[in-house]
Image (cartoon, rainbow, N blue to C red):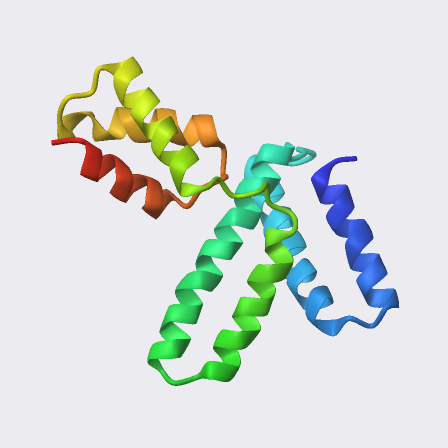
Length: 149
């Protein structure tokens, strides 16, 4: 079953269960996916990778919102965003651990023969393709930066 179909089914289930928070989160994701389809063109469908990227983007936006809400002393809104992230993360692949990420970065650096910060873009692209959304881009970037002189 395609991921966007699973989202639709989970929305229907949440509506029947009167789980207002999950309904709100899933409606936001489905709206984002619909906007993405419109941007791609009439009658187009999304791949699971595109759907996962949209969900990951939603998680990133919510993390940024949490930071802003905490700076503004709005713990209630920060908590709402944290629970939304928890719901969204159930649709994302399991996150990679630090040791596995470091091994992937080391492997890519060795394969590409990267020797300086000038090669960071190539390394980042290869690592991100290899881990496919299983790690945060900021974490990957800081690790790659620390490994390249």
